[in-house]
Length: 404
Ligand SMILES: [Zn+2]
Image (cartoon, rainbow, N blue to C red; front, side, top):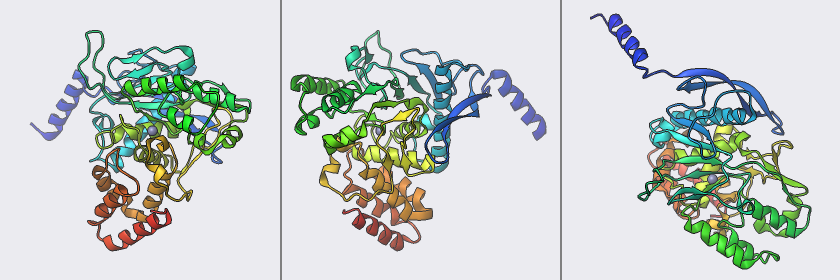
C-alpha cells in the first residue's frame, strides 16, 4: 500500500472512530491592559473541545460548583467566566508542556482530565470530597488546588482526581475599624484556616479564641493544608494599621477572571508530582507565583483592578526583602519572599533558567527550606551546565543579596 493511501486510511479511521474529534470555537477571555490596571475581554479561540458546545477537552472540564456536566458555551456571565478559565488554563498547560515537558503531571499532558469547579463554596474533605458549610463560614474570593482522593471511599462518594476550585466572588465590607477588618477576614475564610493561631498570637482583639481554634482544627483535620491562591493575606501579620490602610472600603476579587490566579493554580497542578499540593508551604506558593509570573510575562502579580480585583496585596518578584527564618513557616506561606528569591535566581540564570529549574525542582519537596534546601538544590542543578562555575557565582550573589 502506498504511503499516501495508508495515511488517508488512517485519517479516515481516526475520523470515523472519533479519536481526534477535537473542535475549536470562538469564545471570550480576559487580559490585563498595558498599564496593568484593568482586565479587558477579548475574542479568543477555545481549542480542543470534545464537542463544540461545552467547555470540555481531554485535559480539562469546567463545571459549576458540585455539578459534573461541563458548562455550555454561550453568552451568559457564568459561561464567559468559565471560558476565561478554560482559555487561560489551556494556555498554562501549553506553556508548561513547552518549557518543562519532563517535569509535569499527567493532567498537564492531557493524560488525565482536570476538573475545574466554578463558584464552589463547600469545604473540602479528604474523606467525602466536600461538605456544605454555614453561610458565615463560607469562603470567597480565592482559589485552591485540590489533591486527589487518597483513602477508600464509601459507596456514596466516588474517588476523585486533582481539581481546581474557584470560590464565589463577594464584596467583603471593611469600614476602617479593626473589628470589621477581622470580620472581613473571617468571612473570607482566612481566620478559620491555618492562620487562626497566628492571628491570636498577633494579639487581635474581638476574635473568639475558642471559635477560631475550633475552626482551625476542623480545617486541618479536613485533610487539606491547601494551596490557596496568591490572594491570601500576609498583610495580616504586619499589624493592624497595614490592615486598615489596605482595606479602605471593600475587598472583592473575581478569581475566575484573573489570569495570574489561574496560572498560579495551574502551576500547583503541573508540579503536583514533585511538590505535594496537600501541604501548603512557602516554597510551594513561591514556585506557583514564579510560574504564574513567567506565564504572565511580568513579575508584578495581582495589580489592582477597580472592577474585578479590589484590595489584593500585590506580589512583586523584584522586591528586595531580606531573609528572615520566620519565612520558612507555613503561616508565611503566602508571603512574597520565596517568589522574590526564585524570580531573582531565574534572572541570574539567563538562558539556562528553564534547564536549571527543571533539574532543581525534583530535588525539592513542598517541605524544603528556602534558606538551606533551595540553594543546595540549585547549586547541584547548575553543576551540569556548560558554564557551571559562572552560574554558581551568580546564584551565590543572589543568595547573598537576599540575606541567605
Ligand atoms: Zn497557591
